[in-house]
Every structure is written in C-alpha cells, then in structure tokens.
Length: 223
Image: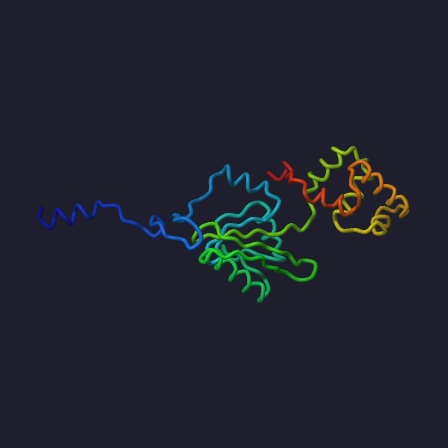
C-alpha cells in the first residue's frame, strides 16, 4: 500500500471529538458528554414544583424546567444572561458560580442561600455527571394552589375553610386572616378548629405539615 492510499484511508476514519470521548469522573462511573433530554423527561420535569436547571461548569443553561423559567424571568433571585444563570448581587453571583462549577467539575454538593430580605431563597446544587450540575430552587410557597384545592375537596372543607387554610399556608396568623377577610377573630378560630377536625390534624403545625407534603398539581392552562 503506497503513501497516497494510506492518506486516503486515514481520511475516511471517524475522528473522535471531546463529546465522544468518555472521561472518568471522580464521583461516579464513566459518562459521555450530555445530550439533549427527551420530550417525555422534559415534560415530567415541568410538573416538578421546584425550579430545576441543568447547567455546565460555566453556568450555561442546558435545560430549564417550567418553574425554573418562571424564576429566571422574574429576575429577583436569579436571572439568565447570555444563556448563563447568574445572581444579580455580587456576593450571590460568586457563590452561585462557584457552587455550579464545583458540582459539575468536582462532584461537590452544596446548599446555598441567595437573594435579599423577603426574596431570599435557598438552592441546592448537585452533580449530575462530569460537566453537568443541577440547580434546584427551593419553593417560595407551601404548595401549589391546585394541590391545596384538592386537599380541601378530599376533606370536605367549605370555601371559607379552604381560604383560611390557604392563608395559613402563606404564613398568616389568625388575627391577620380575620382582618383580611373582614370577620371576627373568633370566626377564624372556629374555622381552624373545623379544618383540624375534618383533617385529623392535632395542631396547626401538623396541619401545615400535611399540606407541605402534598404532591404538586400544575394547572393545565400553563401548557
């Protein structure tokens, strides 16, 4: 075989690119570079009641579920700049960037707190595979409205009782609920007692634990 033949044969061989080459990871088995997730998994992630973003070591967004898109569009705690997730405040920006890089490259897991005052949120950053991290934003509310409505129907709560339960879930005290609804404090306390009786909750704290454990039900209109 002459030199010309060798050159022609070599030209037809597949060339390995970085995304094709398996790389050993310090925190799990060998993985390949990520591909786009399928539509079925993407749809399932949209039903998750927390913002979930898959990112590379440079915080470049690879996938955002619906809740994450909402959070980033709001821009209060995190935002999307040129395709990268960033925090608006300097210290938060450094913490987020460091946590994402450490998770994607070193396999480190971290809980970070970002935002200011009432907008302060918690976020978990975990490794998915080498070069990919997941950012999960803590919920800003106790549970989805539809989940709460389903809970109220399942326990035969009246409309007034359901409104009181929703207010308790927002962290409102009975006196505040009474002022908002324009009723006496004794009325709200009676309604709370009725809610506890119908749900079997021994206290408001136990009632809120029950509500917090409800699975999310996302409204169909969102789709």
